Image (cartoon, rainbow, N blue to C red; front, side, top):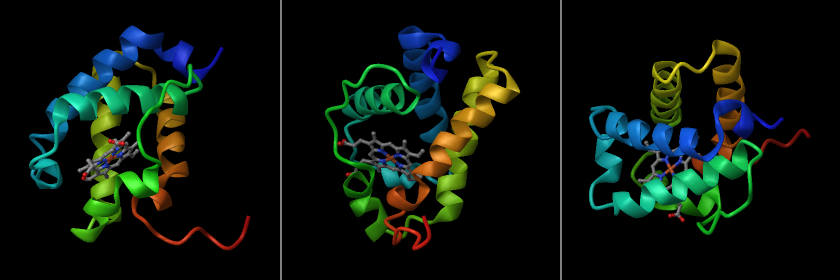
Length: 126
Ligand code: HEM
């Protein structure tokens, strides 16, 4: 069983992403990054991306994480913003009844792409 299956598959990821962006767009720490962003497309891309990242089917048609966040990085995207996004994702899953151990797995997946999202150099050590 993948993390994707454990979370409840397509319906669960769809519901989570919808609630997640409602939270993000109300979060004073990060909402400004989404000004002018097509949120319908954003939700679709995020559903595809998280499906892939959680071990579900690979239907992702968007940009890689570094490229996708170049614009945000140029506006000062930092670790605090990233933490806020992870917090919103975790609280969304908690609200949907996902267990703490699964939420930790999701957080670990997010951590694995932190440096790409923030457009930081890759760590030198493997
Ligand atoms: C776990 C962390 C993250 C994941 C998995 C993620 C995922 C994605 C995906 C899949 C896209 C769409 C790419 C495309 O359209 O081709 C995207 C775009 C975007 N993301 Fe993220 N993201 C993350 C963190 C963040 C953070 C921390 C911010 C800012 C607070 C952010 C702001 C944006 C914005 C504004 C866009 C629209 C692209 C643009 O600015 O032109 N993301 N992200």
